[in-house]
Length: 170
Length: 170
Image 1 (cartoon, rainbow over the protein chains, first blue to last red):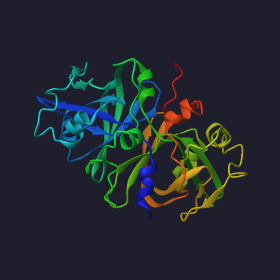
Image 2: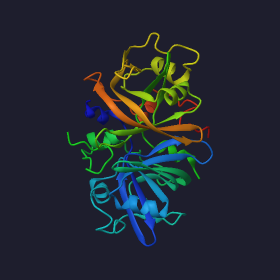
Image 3: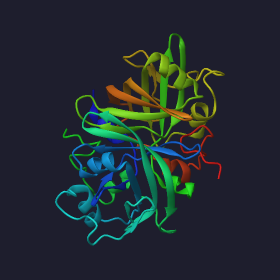
Image 4: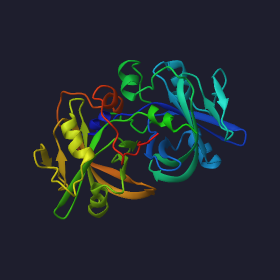
């Protein structure tokens, strides 16, 4: 079994945010996937169980998704992807707005956002797979293209954090 | 709610195949996502319930994934994405090899493949979400880049089939 073939899968790049009581966190993921378009569209996202965002999403039952643009830089991705919301306030110095569901949405270097309700959580070893229902969604910027995972790796030369779904210390 | 923001999500493009007894089918999806890298990696894929491939995967409990390359053309994508395995034999005129799990793998215009066992099926309205465990996986071609959904839409000018997870007749 050659696990390297998993690097051939393609994704986008996103910041997902969650809140419970006064606690907030957000993290970078590549695992946002639409599963159905009917009625209120449903999506899934996998988040590492160790991430503070996963803990808060389990309690708060809401996840907001920001679709990063190709202009997103390593300063933003580093803050949300390589540091923990348990240690720092990730909203400090970050452009954001409050979602209708009360969870902050990162608007910095993002082309659009989606507000979601958590419908179900499926245990997948290191990760929780959240089944989501879209409640709101709007464009943030009319210009700017969504980041692809391929672009992040090849153009921005970004690394994959050890807690990512696609991590593989080969 | 602006459902158009869902078009900002990014994916790859894949042919997934399934078999039950002597019946085979395969279809094009964009919803293959790795959820964890630990032990045997786990993935999810959403397939429209009406697709013959979903019916066979539910019975056969195995799904093989071919990662399409950017060279995949509309002849191949049309056969697997816009026609039904109930009506035609999709293997006829298609390059493929037999997987170790007995399910044919499309090797035509594909860079790699992954053989999977179905662990769980989650009902998502129009689609079934299959939680998969990777059993095998190898490169098919050392050259060639994996197709992105963005590339499919912008360069190949491919359309989204009505039964896709991301379909939206806006």
